[in-house]
Image (cartoon, rainbow, N blue to C red; front, side, top):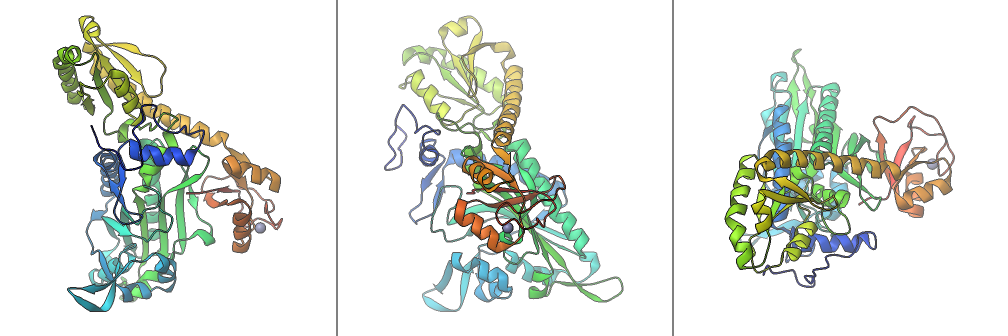
Length: 486
Ligand SMILES: [Zn+2]
């Protein structure tokens, strides 16, 4: 038997219904589906193989897109001199409460404390200042895959953990226009990964000044709606202006010979995406994984117990080999001591898109029974046609998830003009509303409703109106999206 985490009982019935208590559902499903475990340090997450495979699949796709757009991967150190962070005032102020600091090493107190990186703008900025001297060195387009540490007071698996994995793009440019193009390019890469791979519809756009990254001139975001109506920030891209170039001396000689400051960007997508996938698609029975991120896209269950199931096993393995040859990630559940019913529940809970059942009678008819994680009932599939048929089913499944999530989000997003409409909308989902642009008014809305301005949508219609809270004129020229967020 596979061991289960302490305090989480294995239960054939599955998990608390999502509709009953979303938070309990989430906290049970991440452990029961064996994607994470708790680490020994508070807030630390162990990513188990099933969860790590999901991350690897997302990472491989994103890495390919990053490289295709001219970026190159490098690696920078985990430990950063504390003085580096202090060079950019807003940056250090923003990160100070979350820093883990190393004061002793090699049995001695260090002369200068070292920070475990919360992000790498500073150390990369320092290296860029060495590597860039002329306009011919620009743009410099770097990316790093790494772990970072941000001390977490209220940890939640995948979403807020003390250590997490991510990529951080860091680029330097000759001028603002080129750096802004880069920032929006990164945002576009993320939007395609969300929609095409994670089947997660997102609204892209800029953050209000109150929600900006510490040290950034402009912050862009992608916001996705989870099945409890809350927003999840799926990635961010920042235009830093010359703030970090000033702090670290990132300069280049222009064609005129004059020394100019670089304009820099940074952008990141993290393991929290996996939490987002779980909360975008899951249902009362457990996970529902988009085929492109599913460790197993198809699981084949031999039908019958013990001896009986053993007899069909060679045929099951042969079918699995043919599916794998067709590029389908296929798993054979050969735990012969367990009943098929138990296995069905188990793989449903773990979100496998398609299950095939193969018993002696199916084999005699040269068919297998197919059940999809979203469908009702079972359909016979001719064994001969199985690879082509299942590839088509997986594509359709992926598309259906995106459509379903988009419909869900649109149904739960309301255009609001009065405070009553606004508060009702953010209780179940998102509100489209005008805002005056004042940070104090944002804080007031947050205190009253727990909702924050998530994004100024890039594709929002130009429109004028008055702030939904204080009645002063809107400064954004369009409605913002408000919601409660993870
Ligand atoms: Zn206002």
